[in-house]
Length: 130
Image 1 (tube, one colour):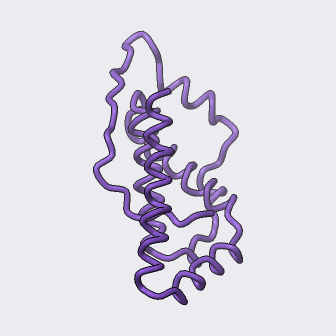
Image 2: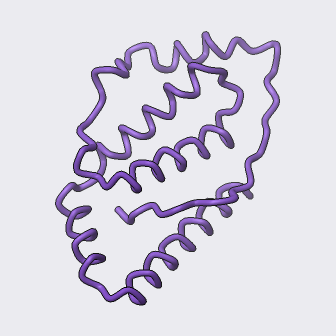
Image 3: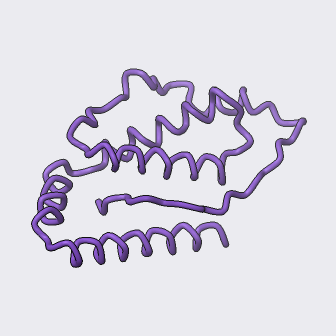
């Protein structure tokens, strides 16, 4: 998995809620068999900046695609996205990437991080247009 770096100034769309839809019932039905507390994973090996950026990324997804869900449902969905992402990561690959970045000289490392961030931003912007 590529490191998620600072994502700033993302455009967030607002989706008004429909008063005729019971979002709470919809949410509970969709996740009725999912135990959020038991499905936490160990994220201690992930650098703090990457954990923070992953939370920002998850929040952006919730804000743009699931804004109809009020609290605490939106936070629960953020946790699910966060832990599912970490569960899908390869710990050794992540740590190897971090080691490789640490061994690069300053310019090459920053250029790689900028390019990775630009690719991620392009991906996010492409998804918003669909």
